[in-house]
Image (cartoon, rainbow over all chains, first blue to last red):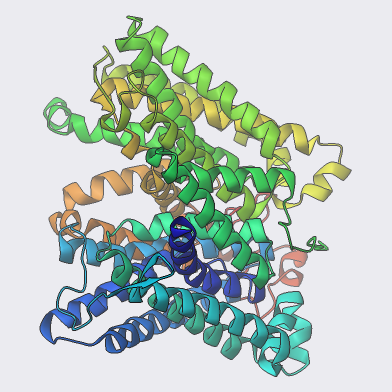
Length: 295
Length: 317
């Protein structure tokens, strides 16, 4: 039971991170390789500010979310939009966005690396303190509680918003056919920047919560998480938010099992192997629809 | 000249090994196959050569050959598995492959030296040897870029459906590019490892993918020459400008992002564009179809009308 709870916490952080990536990728077609860097940088910004002024938990989370959203929207505006405008076709745009993302990601990561001298950072100066509750023999910290509630709540909320709301409809329309969608009055550019801001905000939230949960974060966390998130999205199926939720908890569960079996050094192989297996056996993922693209 | 060489032999060596690694990714990119398997093969080749050299007492060149061939074979098998994937999915699957190589190396026990890697694999390779190997690889690539064969590859990249219609066996080209990429990547890994005498799992990581990609993006992905320009740029810039060495990752990040946005063909693509433009201006009466093929206004970066079948954009990226 205790393991299940830990899995749930780990999965919720994965979920928050992957949701933003999946949202941007499945609707506006942008796989943001800077997502991991945004995750690290926004948590670092909160750490940086909280070193000067003692901050409460909500304030730290707010800073992290805002930094993430700003960074992500800027990336979209300054890098991805120009690439989309200048690309001949879908395939070259896809590759250039991936490369542009890798380039953009290097900048905040290098800044954090330089500022922390590659040492992990935390929120030592925050007024937040961890408390442990005992419920029916289960030990749960208030941090995990917040993480799980935030993760599951936002995931369900975002899924419903995408399915039910008018903006969600517009966003999904872009995902199906951006040209037709813009003829129907969907403002693609504004929607894209908004989506990226939401995605970045979620990355910032995941970053802050991860630091609260684990007490510290290393610079290289972002890259690992990026590939894990890819594994989750591919497993669930691109375009399905429910798939991302499933993917996050399956991956977290598998990793917990590996840790429980005392094979900690193999833990990264789970997500890499998962990517491989899913792409070979069922490329559209569990809930995904087969992509049809005419050339 | 001799003085200059001895002063810079380490940098020259780094340029050549970086170029070899970059070529293992440039080749599939030129074929329109978005594969980073070359980086994984760099690890396989490096580890195989180091194990063969230190644990089994093989000679330098047997070890290198062993590493190269094993990497090539494994990469071909990988190609058989994943050649149907395209675009981002293929890219991520091959990145996952490279990272799995690293995880396996970490868990390989005494054979791979675990997380601390292998030491003391100093083979008898000189810069001249590396240069000759590099020359062989580049001649091979240059042949594949020239004439009929080169145009076939361009077609496979630009329009696979058209290529199939023209009777080109696209699937076979794609599978073979995995073999070639694996061989070059394995060679790069084996040579680099036996030159440096060590290899660790941490070297075969996402960062290595980024380095190889940076080289190609800066130089241009359409030809080996682009990878050469990129390798020279990336290894010599920090030695020429000292402030670059200090801010290296940030500057490269900016350069890669800017190149992805403004220069999809890299430096090579830029030079080709300029030459085309100058050639077009010098020609007093341009052929009429050139004017007709002028790019529409909504595509500011559309390729210059070019007379050769090779697109001046430099293809895949």
